[in-house]
Length: 246
Ligand code: MF3
Ligand code: CO
Image (cartoon, rainbow, N blue to C red; front, side, top):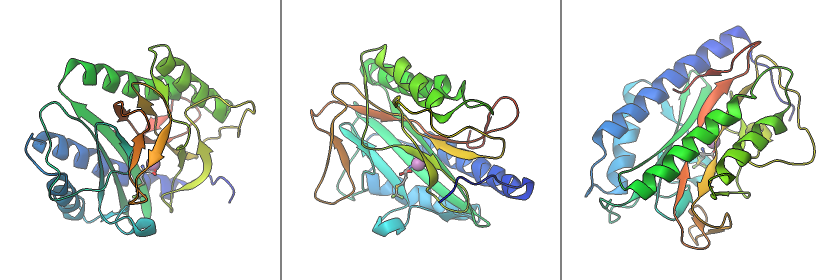
């Protein structure tokens, strides 16, 4: 599939999807409490998304059984919510959510924690996204974004997950191109105004190697170290990128 350039009408719908997703994350963050189950978070997220007249895009996507991915501690991404999985005070928790508004998608993830060790990993992961999007400008190439994310995260000794990547987004959750968070030898596509991209660094405390659980979804660090995830849907413009989901 070719990388699509969105029309002004499509961009307007993606802006609205992004605004709603940003509010969803804000409301989830406000209500996160130790002792709550990951299933409660999913339930709350789905209610919030539907209250805005949107559809939670992850629900039943390739058989994913929930609306929100809740990934705790050594779970990197795609953690499946469970009724018996309760949040602990010291946990590091990633929430990944997607919404569909009038046929258009937005996808974003945030990570929360209160221990100083968690905060450092969370801050570096978030900042690696912002380092990456400094290069998200018409005329640059995709690899410029990827390389900047990697350089920043690795400068703190953290790992950059290789087996999962960001992606184009629009009338589908996953569109071309794939967006690695690490440099490759080829430059990748030339960035053009109207491209919409989901950029999502997944950063680990230790080794970047991951494994899949038997549920076929939950991605864990191989070494059991913590992991953080930060994602936004962005629009490439003639100048600075527009962050649609913040
Ligand atoms: N942000 C994740 C991704 O782009 C969300 C997909 S989870 C799924 O892969 F459940 F929908 F698959
Ligand atoms: Co995504």
